[in-house]
Image 1: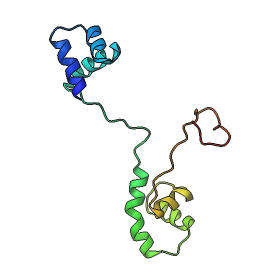
Image 2: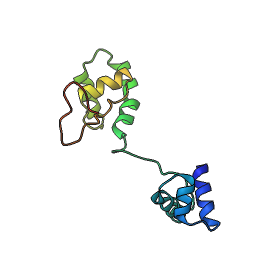
Image 3: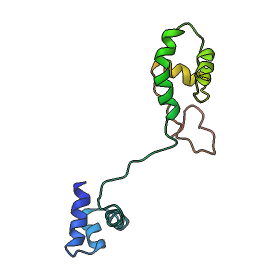
Image 4: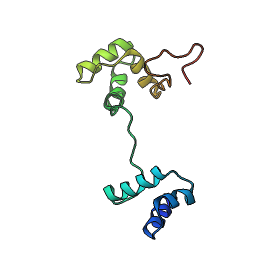
Length: 125
């Protein structure tokens, strides 16, 4: 944040955008983006990055599970998934139900190109 403020201040004091980019070791496009962000939002803070849909199902499942596990601790994953659906939740896979019960985070997405299969021997690059 300090760098962003110094870059914008230098431009405000009369330094050209290209001179500011060279002086602070950033690209000209970066200087342009900082100035545009300040014009649009009034600040220089980065925007929050969201990737994909909001994890609504996961939140609902975490809120619903404790009471369900207390009431039916010996139920199968399929029975838990069916009960979640019957209680108004969205359909949930057995693996997602298993991870939720175990308290595990969702699996990391593969970094392989979306249109190509992952390389043999690994999940991607």
